[in-house]
Image 1 (cartoon, rainbow over the protein chains, first blue to last red):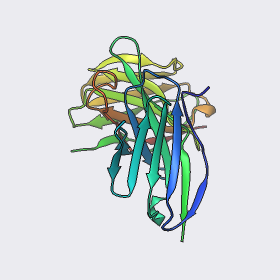
Image 2 (image 1 turned 45 degrees about the vertical axis):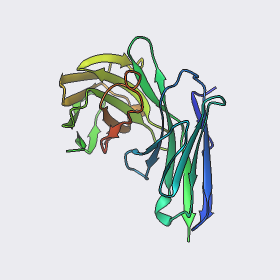
Image 3 (image 1 turned 90 degrees about the horizontal axis):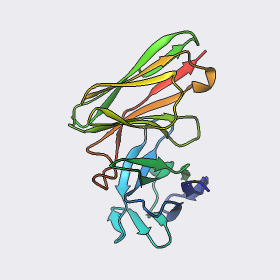
Image 4 (image 1 turned 90 degrees about the vertical axis):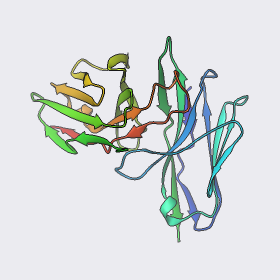
Length: 113
Length: 117
């Protein structure tokens, strides 16, 4: 089983649609959770951190369910500029004082006019 | 300065060449990372430096040799690479290591696109 799993898509949606991405992770000791966005041939950029209480940033809402080891990202009122790959990222705590971020394979979103 | 700067942006090298990738940040971040990303795949962790010391090596072949000369610089020395090593090499930094203080995301550089011929 992969450490972080996402549906790769692609998700093809019209402008203005609401779209939701899901992600599951295998390590119950994971501490931190993020959504990153990556445009074609560009580096990943942090979109938002994810908290159990849920957090919202404009049209984007992220949610964490620790019991189910499940993370979600909701995008409302999709824009053409939202077209990108969305990467679910989880911190795996290692031995001692180490940790590392592990990336899911990404979900591709294409917003069409 | 909120950037991670990587040079060069593109590199073509032969299998017998020796080259180095460079990464620099001036955000006072104490953790720096090398990731490798193949087309249509997620970034894969290669190395983690924490406070200028190598803390994680993800079983990377010895033809890749990281170096952290100081808290702002991270190098990746390349020698005798194979064509399958062609990829986008991403450097990242974070204020501290995930696991010590949580909810620190990474800032990525724009990457070096490496082609081995």
